[in-house]
Amino acid sequence: MDLTLQKNIFISFFRTGMLGFGGGPSTIPLVHKEVVETYKWMTDEEFGDVLAIGNTLPGPIMTKMAGYIGYRVGGVLGLINALAAAVFPTVLIMISLIGVLIAYRDSPIVQGMTQAIAPVVGVMLFVLAYSFIKKSKEALGWKIAILLGAISLVTYVWLNWHPAILIGALIIYSIVGKHKQTS
Image 1: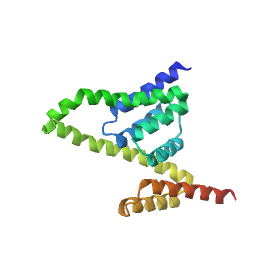
Image 2: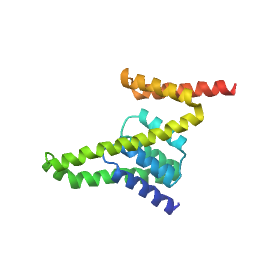
Image 3: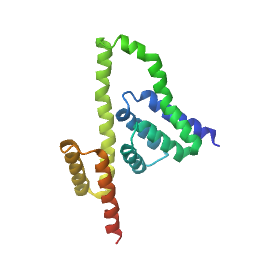
Image 4: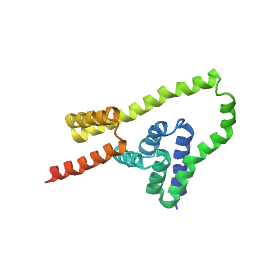
């Protein structure tokens, strides 16, 4: 058992849980930063795969990603460690701040704080999406990457398809596309 690895798993997911205000969308770039950039446990491509699969399953994305990545990096102990680290900050914050937030929810200061976080989360998601687009361009070329992005945008935003349908279709496309390339 590698105690340093387990400590790093705990620290990375605890830090993500503490800073990931607002749930899933704000935690994804933070998990990416820890897992891909800081500890280099995964590549961008592997992280994208984990994110895609995690989005198709029910439940909070942070716990699904923590569980999978913790298991992959540190086995069963890593899974338990990562899940505990991801959930523990939320429990602490909920217990300590819920009374204060309820008492002052109509306060302009509290409303301003929550409204100020939205643009920051938007920028973090944009940066993550941009890095995925660059990786797609390298793997597929601009034409296919833009075409698949446009189709995804239309089906998700305007046709209101569930993301799992898009992800499933893109997985099938990648399997068929790779099969055609190797044949």
